[in-house]
Image (cartoon, rainbow, N blue to C red; front, side, top):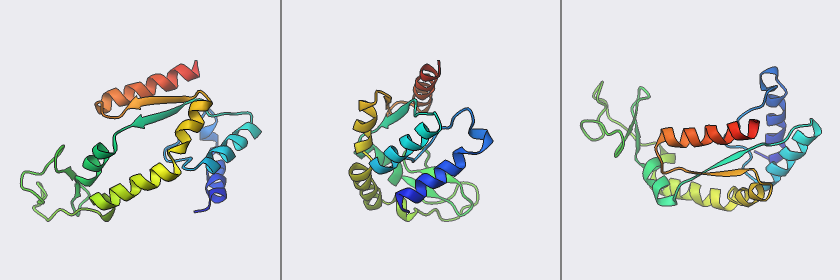
Length: 158
């Protein structure tokens, strides 16, 4: 989707009343052009990005986490290491065959990481220069990562 269309969609969504006190965005912006256009959009409305949490995880850990995910036909999610079924590739509850989505296969995950490094990683420096990037160790527990992000958001809202 073109950057201009994406920014326009975000602008429309942020114009709704439930966004009056701010919003948390996940997956946007993805490119430098989107980030700059978003900054201009916010400035036009007297707002700004206050904090950008960067959940840093080594590539090999990302591949392990994402490529280990298995799905059941009913939507249950397993992971070969972190939440394995009792019998490999078999759903614990209904005995059906588990499958791996195409976008969870190791080669696809590596490609997604390459695209991220090419298109999105430059935003790290962009937001560091603005002084609003907060690096969070994504190898910590889910609770610790969540708490670190909560602290970063709270510190910027005071």
